[in-house]
Amino acid sequence: MPNSQIETTLQIKAFVEGISLPVTKESLIEIRNRMYSVLEIKPCDDEASSEHEKSIRWKRTAGQILEDGYVYEGKACTDQVVLFIALCHALRLETRFVKIKKTGMVHSVSEIKLDDGWYIFDVSNINNIPIKGEITAETPYRDWQLWKKGRDAWDLGLTEFDTIKKIQ
Image (cartoon, rainbow, N blue to C red; front, side, top):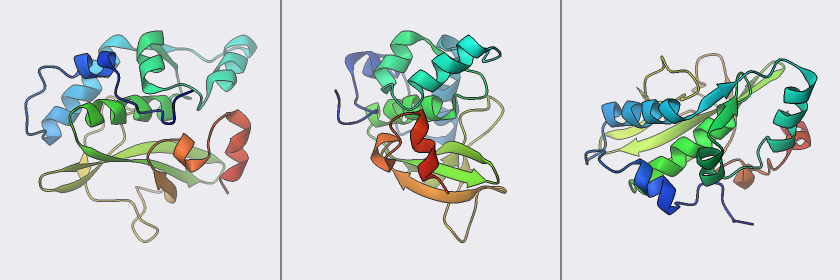
């Protein structure tokens, strides 16, 4: 088993070929759009799909997500951020996996360091754009509070569906 969800495989490296350096905000959007061009967003609308989603939540590496070619609608933020961060790593960018929370809900976003500073990018919505800044206890993201930051979900101790109980 890999030590990290964001290991840079040959497939990950090939996926970002042609992205111009240095990476800009527009490049981050291009990476996200490439992800969406190959990932099927499967519905999670019955017991079978819900159980399957729970069985894979926080378990797949970026390479596995890209190879599988799908994420589950409304449940995919961690998979999308893990894949996005791995793609950014292939371009030698410094990144952070960020888990945020609000009443009864959790969410994953990324922070990416570009030449002019850190950017928050919620890649789970095709309409979002990177915004300059970092999420801290004092500076939440919209109405979401910071839970933890790390390399990936595994680094935060999130390894399977039941580990959601760690997030308070």
